[in-house]
Length: 63
Image (cartoon, rainbow, N blue to C red; front, side):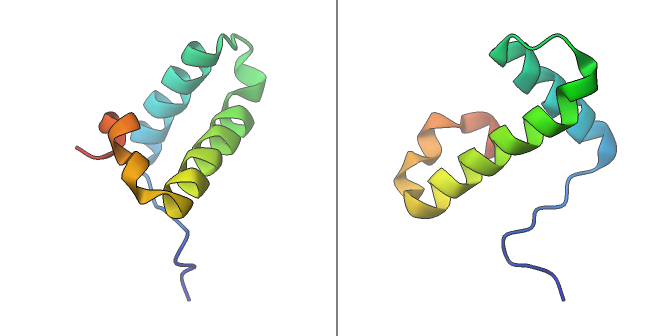
């Protein structure tokens, strides 16, 4: 059973997204890339679930 809060992203897209997130946050150590990007993405998704009107703040997530 899939959790309704789970989002599946192809690995190639995740690699690109996580690199962009870390670049945006100024994190250069790739050792932490996935953990940092996952936490950041989870925070964004949590914010959007609580405040769906905030989608306009993240246009690249809703292409």
